[in-house]
Length: 125
Image 1 (cartoon, one colour):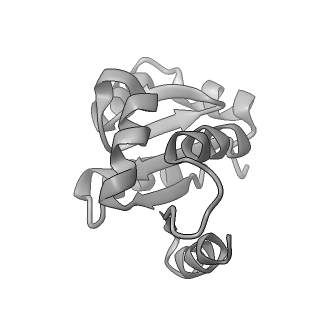
Image 2 (spheres, helix red, strand yellow; image 1 turned 135 degrees about the vertical axis):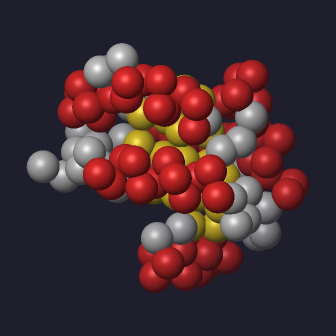
């Protein structure tokens, strides 16, 4: 658990947490499920993912600041499975899989993003 706490502390400095299973008691699938439950909005992404950067920018514009979890290669499969067919990056709002960048933009263009974020408690304003 100390490795996870250290990774989260490093991530808070950059705005991204690193999901790692080193020394943790949870399986990757359990950790992903817990992070989805515990965060009103969370993005799981690969290291240096430009699409997740665009997703974070769009969410910031509407007033949300999601938890951004940078996955290690071994953990990508668990997050991708939780996201369904969307793959990575994957956004979850209020425990619901929104999808990747395309799903996020589509939800925003249909006018459903802000109400969904508000209902999940993910808006800062």
